[in-house]
Image (tube, rainbow, N blue to C red; front, side, top):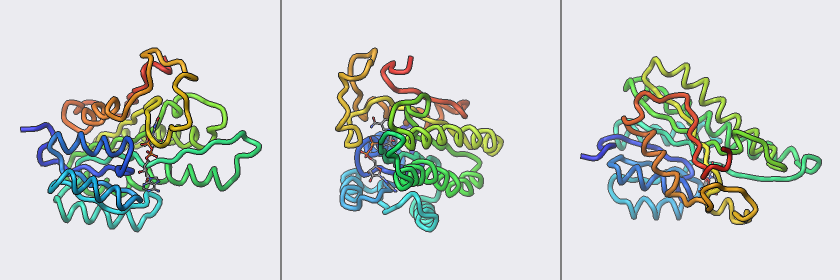
Length: 239
Ligand code: NAD
């Protein structure tokens, strides 16, 4: 028997990068997995590779209607939503004088509003079941400031704050809400960052697999008494 047998997880932004690794590890641990992303080809390919307990749903996390459709379809297919990983995200950067309103709105809309909509969409099913684990992906940029990342940093601090208010409100309903704060992970989002420009005590950038174990821990019962907490997975960057 695996730790997540019979549980159902929705992972957003799961067609590639970190989200794909989270979908894989939750699936390997026995969960039914909904791979939710804008990228239809990659998402459908991953679902096909994982097999019967995985399905792809096209989701734009900024759309209330699409969240309604995806949660209804997950409930229809698997009967419950036990875990939500709010992972979909984008990044942009510019010095403040050149940080356009369009840039600001785009990053806040996907990273923060998308996370809010996801949490709101799954809570009724989790309340009805009397349990649930919501894992919100923030960043080390949700713990400190870095030049030019103004919208990204604000969004990731926002995700951390939303996690706290939800943890306090939803604890009595048996729903846990935690945030995860990765450092530099090698994905398409970070191709332009040189790890040698950063001080990383563990001496290397991470791969998605370096973060996935924390997601599995937070999804399952080993973390049953953990809520409102911040999990920093950064090789010591912010120590
Ligand atoms: P990525 O760009 O490789 O993947 C992001 C995924 O999100 C893509 O599949 C994309 O299609 C999807 N996505 C974007 N907008 C969406 C939307 N509106 N609706 C649905 N899906 C959408 O990035 P990644 O590095 O895998 O990052 C995943 C998450 O981890 C992000 O929230 C990111 O901020 C966070 N993070 C990444 C790092 C890093 O170093 N890579 C560090 C800290 C935090």
